Amino acid sequence: MVEVHDGLPQDGFAVPLRLHNVLLALAGRLDDSALSDARELVARSHLDDSAELIAGTLIAGRIMVRPAEQRELALVLEMSRSDATLADHLTVGDGVPAYTHRFSRDNEPERGIAEALERTLQVLPDLRSVHAVWRNTPAGSVPGPLPQRVVLVEIGPEAHPPAVAFRVDDALRKAGIRSVVEVTGPSAERADYHEAALAAATPVWLATSESSGSRSSWSKRTSRATARAHASVEVSREPSHAAPDFEEPALVVPAQSAAVDEQDQPAEPEPAPTEDERRNRAAATTELSAEEVAQLRAAIAEDPEKGRLIAGVGIRSDGAEDVVDLPELDLDDPQLSERDRQLLRELHAELAERERAEAAKAKLNGSEQRWAGS
Image (cartoon, rainbow, N blue to C red):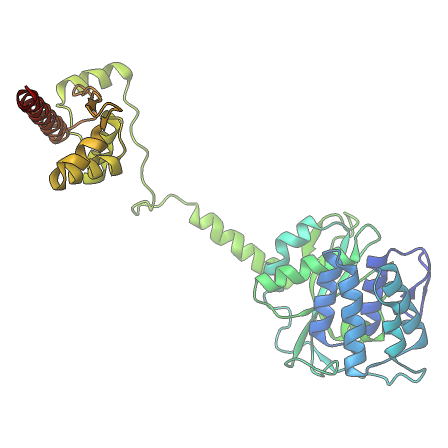
């Protein structure tokens, strides 16, 4: 049996469980949002942030704590490698005012909880019960909206209180249910606040005595709701004559039949390539990029001399022009369209014509110079 004094654990407890019990002792005095945030930080192993959040909220709200609670919080701050001196700024007194809260089971505080927690309760081990109740009185220095739903979870010795608190709270949040989750058990005993809440609460889920808590059964209200849900699922599985909302799988044609069909059917024309694809294909065939092809065409149209340089025509050291052969055309490339082939033919023909004209001109100039010299 775990020894607990003033609602706080004694030596031998790990820091997460110590923080969980500190939060249990402060339930009804600390802001509901701060309680939930601190418990989430514990579950995510941000122990220092959780301890500092608790201390900061108590200091800012000037919420009175007992001397034993101050010592425990100082120890938790130190163990989580936080600033333990924060505990010196707490408002401490033996006469902590009694927070008398009013709880009610009217207006179905359990509505929607069973459905939201169905999967979670099947996965978590050693859960004993879940209750729900409305709290009609504020808590903390910055209270939230009222009434506030309080979900009480009772666990066995095999369950881990911080993990259960986070998983249950997370499932309820995802279902859009605003609540404060309080998890109690052998290592996390209830305070007067939880006893008063449990006395007015409505059962949501109760573990079966036959399975010792490893399996669960819903309360009567939940059992009826679950039965109706399963019945609707079974009805939806009945064969329907309506049109299916999915595409039917394609028929599998035998290989031989498929070959015969392919011979009978004319080949579908390939989609016409886009302008960018044509340019890229032409560039790949001439071993030039699309940008280089475009540059070459523009240069030939605007300045023949510049076009010859880009095409590979240079000046040798002796002043004569050196013509570099253009790459051969690969007009049999199946990726080329007729327009691509025609474009390449025109481009190479134009380059060859300019090369011949320049060579003839250079030869003529050379002959004239020789005649003039003679």
